[in-house]
Image 1 (cartoon, rainbow, N blue to C red):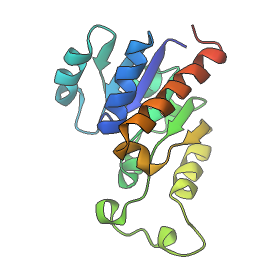
Image 2 (image 1 turned 135 degrees about the horizontal axis):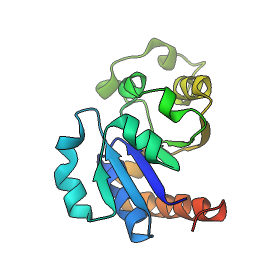
Image 3 (image 1 turned 90 degrees about the vertical axis):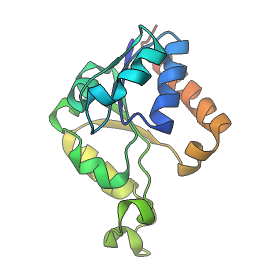
Image 4 (image 1 turned 180 degrees about the horizontal axis):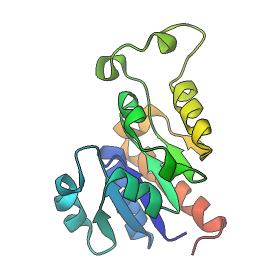
Length: 158
């Protein structure tokens, strides 16, 4: 594994990108606004980072980290993720995502059900969903990202 694709490049995605580059990986950054909005971040990260479309990040990544608001999950291109290992960080925040009735009832306690159902339909291989509090606790996010990178190396990465 040499390249990590990031679909979503906010706080979590940007932190994972920095840690991945520090660990020797290349990254492809993307967001729904387009690669031109990520030029500054890619330049800041250096020669091992480039900005692309979400489809380019999905295709280029040996591993793809999806880190978008839950309401944006349906905008992620499906076909490029087919067969890909996906780390999904999506979490449901009604104040940000709008109320999703099936996630408000007692029968569904997490956004994972909706997100995982979509990923399974794509035949992507989901290996984890990170907890929402990682985004607000940088030390925990860094620790989780390091575990992710170690996991990748143990499964055939350099």
